[in-house]
Image (cartoon, rainbow, N blue to C red; front, side, top):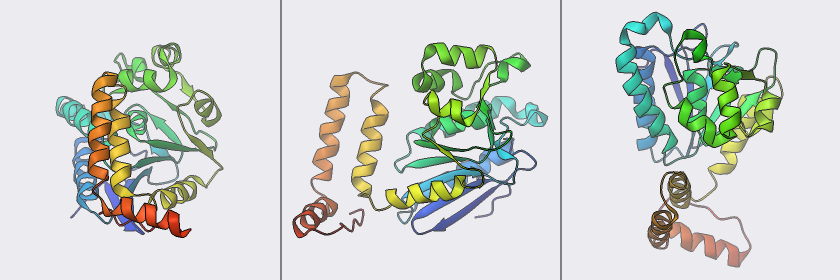
Length: 256
């Protein structure tokens, strides 16, 4: 698979997807299409259990929408919504490795991921500054940011185009971990290395049901939880988990 603006690497059941659109990894239509292909490949590869998304270069994760490709804005709006939602509902854990700034669509991409690890270095901030351009965050930012940080903080960040530092982002629950300078990818890989040892079928079930928790009523959520558990009860991983527990050893889950 040929990709111009995305680098996809796989090692030890971890897929590393690197945004590679210099100088600041903005999203034009070509980059978005490349990302669609890369995400689909990871989803269909049973050998990949975790996906990390990071930014290429030394400047940061992503500065968001590529304004030079505004002519394709309508198509990108639709594709961006669909792809970010796909990542939000991804059946494998997704880690956003924020190696610097994450603005606009880059921030909105991070909001879709299950974990966000942000590097603490000069110029490292995250936010949705779209109102500075006379528009709103339109790739899911108005919906996902309030769910993470609460309505008052989301209003402050969006209406005043406020960008927060890694420490502030951690304090308000926008990121799950702050990494020392130069350590974001290493910390993300360490987290991914723990996740790959977890039972893949059960992980997918947990992601699905937890992901539903804010979108549906509790009765529908409980029904989905029960159905997932019935499916998991038929898996070889569940048997392995019990046997390993009884034998006092670490389980070796195969995703079967």
